[in-house]
Image (cartoon, rainbow over all chains, first blue to last red; front, side):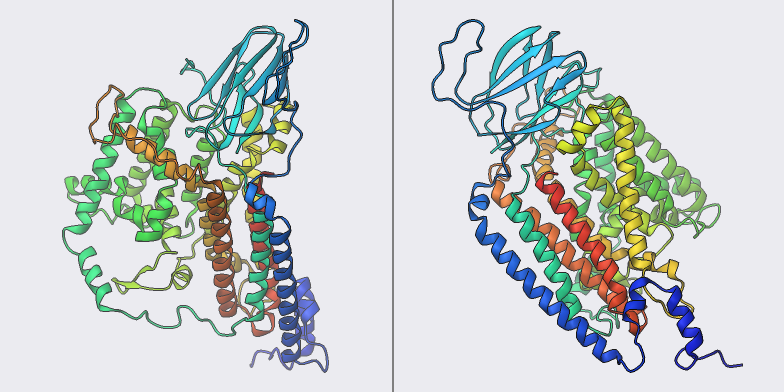
Length: 184
Length: 445
C-alpha cells in the first residue's frame, strides 16, 4: 500500500502543520499563495532590516567617537571628587589628598561599598578612607599586588596603579570584594 | 605576607588585574554587525548545501605534510615531547612549593585550558597527539603485550560524549567555583583523579574511550574541527574550516559539551560583574553554593535555549525532531571559540609568559633550568586597551558570522524546503542573543 503523499493528503498535512512550531504555521502556504512569493517577502524583509542595522551601526560609531577614543564606560559616581590642593584640616576632618577618594565602611561582616566599580586614572593617587570596627587588611589584585593594613577606627591610605586593567580590592577578613578599580 | 594555607584569593586570578571592559560604542557596533550579518545570510540564503558536497581536493604540498605527519617517527616524537612536559610539570606538582610561584597553576589553568584552543585551531586534534594518558595507556599495553586500542569491551555508543561533559564540568567547577582552586593539594588531586579515570577507561574500553570521554581531548577535537585539517580515508586533507565543522561526529552529549564550554565562559565574566558581586556578597548563603548555582543555571540556559530553538521548526517525515539539536550543535563551536578568544587572549599572553618564566624554576629553589627564568613579561596588550577591545569584539563577531553560515548550510541540508528559511529563524535569534549577551558581559554587566 502506498504511503499517503503529503502533497495530496491535505487533511494529514493540516494536522501535521498544527503540531509543528508556531513559526511554521505563520509561513505555511495558504490556498493561492506560492512558495516563491513567500521567499521573496522574507528576502526583501531581510535586506531592509540589514540596511537599517548598517545605518544604526554607522550612527553608533559616529555619535560616540569620543567614547571610543577615551576607551571608558559610562561613569559611575566615585565617592569622592578630585581636588587639586590639600586642605589643611582639623583632626576631626580627614585631609583631602589630590586624586580620587574611596570611602569604605566596615562593620561586622558588612562592607560598603559592596563590589562597586570606581574609575581611576593610571598613576593617580587613590585614597582609601576606611572606617572600621576591627583591624584588617585590604588586598589589591594588581601587578604587583598591594596591600593596606588598617587599624580599627578611621584611617586614610593612598595607593597608586601604573597598569591599565580592573583591580579587585578585597577585604581579607570578610573575604568580600569591596570595590573594583577601573584603571585606564 | 598572605598565609598560603588559607584561601586568600576569592577568585582565581593568578594574573593580577583583569581586562578593562570594552567601550559601549564597540559593544553596540559589534551587536549591530552580528545582527546585520545574520539577516544578510538569510537574504543571500543558498538553497543547496555548499560544504561537504564531494571529496576534498588534494594538493601536493598537503601530501607532503601528510607524509611527514604520518611518518614512523613524527607521531612518537610529538607524543614523547608531550609526555616529557607532563612529567616535568608533575614533578613540580608533587615536589614543588604550594605557592603561586609554582608553575603548575599556570600550566593547568592557562597553558592547558586556554592554550588548547589556539593550538587546536592551528594543528587540528592537538591534544590527541600529545595526550599523556594515551601515552601511559599505550605503554601499559605494550608492557602487558596487548593492543592499546582494544579494551575489555566496546565503548557503548549511547554514552557518547557524556563522560567528557562530566570531566569538563569538573574542570570549570574547579576553576570558577571551588574556593581552594589556587592551592597545590586540590590541583594535584584533580589531576591524579583525571589520570586514574582515564587509565581505567582506557583499560576497559580501549583508545576509543579517549575520543569520547577525555574532557581535554574532546574539547581539542571540537575546536580542531575549525582548523583546515581533516582526514579522508586515513589521508590528511585540507578543507575549509566551515566544511570541517560539518564533519564533527554527532554523538549523544554533543550539545551538552557546547553548553558547558559556552556557559562556563559566560559565567567567568558574569561572576565579576557588579550585579553578581553585590547580590552574592549580601546574601547569607555560602559563596560557593551561589557560584555553583550560577554556573549550573548559565550552562542549562545556554543548552536549553539552543535545544528549543533548533527544534522549533518543521521536519521531514521520518526525521526525528530530537535529532536536530545534535546535528546543529557544531555551529556553536565558532561562537565558543570567538568568545573564549575575546575573554582570555590577554590572560593567555601575559600569564602564559609568566608561566613559561616560572617553568624554569619548578621546585621554587632559585634554579633556571629552561633558561627563561630571567625574562620579563611583555605586557603590550595590557597597555593598548583600545587594540585589545577591538580584538575582542572582532573575535566575537567573527565567531558569530561563522556560526550563522555553518548553521544555514546544515539547515539547508536537513530541513524540508518549506521550512528552510523560517525554521532557521529561532536558531538565528538565539545565536544573536548569545553574541549580544557575550558582548554585554565583556562591556561589564
